[in-house]
Amino acid sequence: MARVIHVFRQPDRFVAGTVGEPGDRTFFLQASETTRTISVTIEKQQVAVLAERLGSLLEEIASRFGADVPEEVPDDLLDTEPLDVPVEEEFRVGTMGLGWDAESKAVVIELLAITEGEVDETVVLDDTEEGPDAVRVFLSPAAARAFASRADRVVNAGRKPCPLCGEPLDPAGHICPRQNGYRRDSELTDDES
Image (cartoon, rainbow, N blue to C red):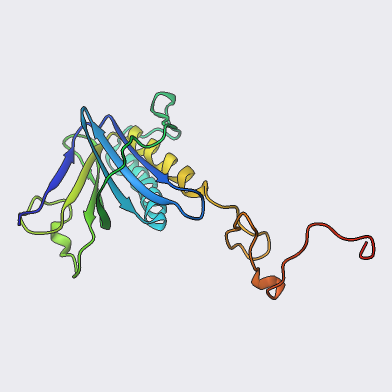
């Protein structure tokens, strides 16, 4: 079966978002253009890496190609809205690719479906017939900056870290390895104070 490549040349929206409560969130990337919306599932760490690499790519295209890259997210591109519903997974992301299309002056993000075997790197950002399904999104440098900024906020909006060990705190607390497995009670009795 031939691969399906969903191309968004002028997306109305491309965002990272989550479904679920902190500690039990599923991460998605969602692209929308006119009446078409595609959502793909992605790991939290992949979202963080994508945002970081996107920031590096934006710096590089500004210096190498003289592209107009804003330092901050323009107010009109700030997106704080939730994901569009229904959120239906098209596929789970395995490999990601980033590039710069000098002709259209756009950042290109490609998300490839996870596969059983190794992914041949030549299929990334290519229209070959064989390979995993993909979502390819073209973004202006300003829209790419906005995507990276929101992705950082989404990743960091989870559970607060433990001040001692840095592991995420559950609503009921957690057993901290720095406390040798003991929980610290928040209230002391009169005998203990």
